[in-house]
Image 1 (cartoon, rainbow, N blue to C red):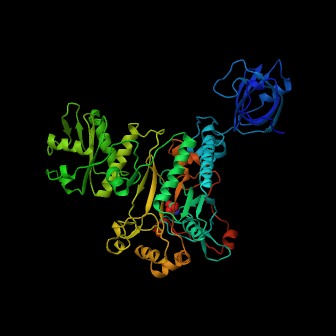
Image 2: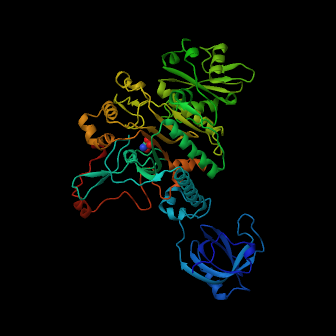
Image 3: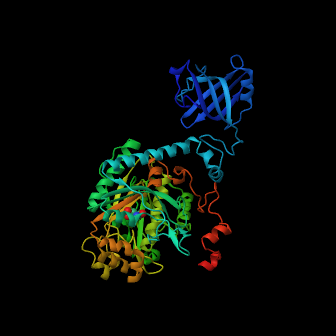
Length: 589
Ligand code: ASP
């Protein structure tokens, strides 16, 4: 028997008991005649004491040979501590060691295994198993397990069936690039790893499973912007005989259940916002509504005053920054520099201070009088003491830029409070999105999303105007889930694919299996998927998903611990009937 108890469970009521504990040496304090060791495991820390007067000399000698992260087993009696530690559960007691076994030695760890560590990200990732011993990461993984457990509880109680779908599938265009896997048994052919189980869950509905869910890995070979992972986890769901309202109801329930069980927060009905409204008011389809700073469109009051930049812009739009009138010239210059960074891309920023005395001072006083600026204040909701920041340009670009500024300022002003939760549904998304570079439409959600009833005709005349039966769940400025009511008949699916640029043959080659299934009594159906990694991080009040994944990849998609991806040897390549001819990136464009 390695242990009679864990290191987190003994307290004053156990004094006098003989126990056996195992764990890692976290800390050694050697006073010569007395040694204390903090013994750690997943459950906590128990203090061990070796005392010249009471402990065998040989054991003391052995204790002196221990180093950090040695794995040991000890036996002894629980005694009351002289100086207690009220910060930990076991803080009133210690174990007077009578037997000590070294189960395994440890090299000196490359960083400290403490809550605050001196290890940088790359080093911690290389030795992730040591990082996981630290409380912050360990607790994140336990937290994640609690969230998934609650997801399973909730959905199972609602008659959802957990069903696995395959990982080796056929490439499906869901917007991202596929990871592919060569098939040894089918020379020259490749599987793709699923970007999501989308078509399979729809086929499960055709199969009559009615309510499906799966906590499932998805794979997307995308350029890794900050805090994206090439493999990530979804809570994937699908239901038959449902309308949008049914889906929103169930998954609002799930989100509320999680907030209650995990965060002990009760939230009422989630607000709903159309995509158009979100874009107009927040410049973004995943608005953080924990704070105001809503957009005020200024075309009516800012154009035709001989200020060329505004006159030439498609949209002039501003926000009011609470308390910003007090910013110094230098602070404002810094903000201007911030919006001009290539990541944001604005050409500049116009501002107007709304002074406490009710007057205005702007960077464009030459063109705008006090009355004009009062109109800006009204449109942006600015109050005396605020700063109005105004950007202008092409509608989509300027909205994105102002949205970035809004989020940045809110962050600086402490308005994005991690303990506050503001979920909402964004609905009525466009069905199609125009790729400004290629001039082609592609599905905003995915090709299986149905247009709003009665809008099929519009697809021919004005495709950009068609709205989809699609919805996103947004939490604190993050899209945590999204889904749609699907197309469930072959004819509509064929029309949709045609609009996405598939020829009839291509449509059949890619989606024949799904369209065939639609001809065998496919029920109306719809669903959604939550991004589990991000959901967990947000529920924990954090933003970095890597900290909630046991073995994440870095920004170049590498696992630096196991050193993947890596080369295959010739035998493996031969078995796969493959010969490499690596093209240089430039030749590959
Ligand atoms: N498969 C979709 C996605 O991964 C979610 C859905 O439509 O259910 O975004």
